[in-house]
Image (cartoon, rainbow, N blue to C red; front, top):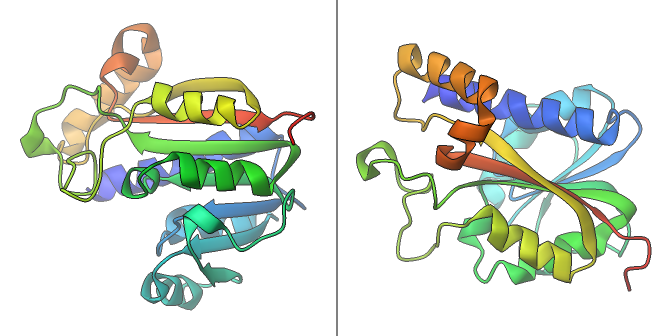
Amino acid sequence: FIHYAETGAQRPCRFIQERVGGVHGKRLLYVGSGNDHLVSLPLEQAGAFMVNLDVVSDPLEDLMAAGAQNCVCGDARQLPFRAETFDVVFSKGSLHHSQPITEPLRAMARVAKRGGHIIAAEPSKYSRLPRFLLPAGLGHPTPYEHALSSSDVARTLAMEGVDHLHCTALTHAPPGTPALLARPWERLGNAMPWLFNRFAFEFILVGQRGDGME
């Protein structure tokens, strides 16, 4: 799980930096951050103005203790920010806890600047992985959540005026996989995405808020 957590943090950080042309001087909102210092702090250290939001205060206090500067306790479905505030609005593993997903995605699109990026990473319901490899909260739905597909997220964002949508695998191997197996699995996935992406444990989807969005 440690290997999964570390690689699962490095990849979205790298993905965000590459997609938006670097984060220095840009405003980023992490929706459903929890205490995820592995994602939040590297982006802040890279020069981003990071805002971390979660509905529970305790993990935000842990995140602040780790060094995060800006933490806000709030509801992802009703983000407490003005429209067009952030250059990048992203979430990782939180949308499937917020049903229906139209509400947080609509809120994310609202607070993104025109031309700004919206990024979502989620466990995929199409991963076809054995259930014993999927701990609760990581693609193994409880009665309070529902697994998502990239098409679910893309369809909702498109309805909110988000275009240039692109999806790829974030993590091919699930967190229950031993590191000796996970590493070659990830290498094979990166080398042959056309074969392995359909079975990937997590997807990451990015789009841009259209200039003509109301």
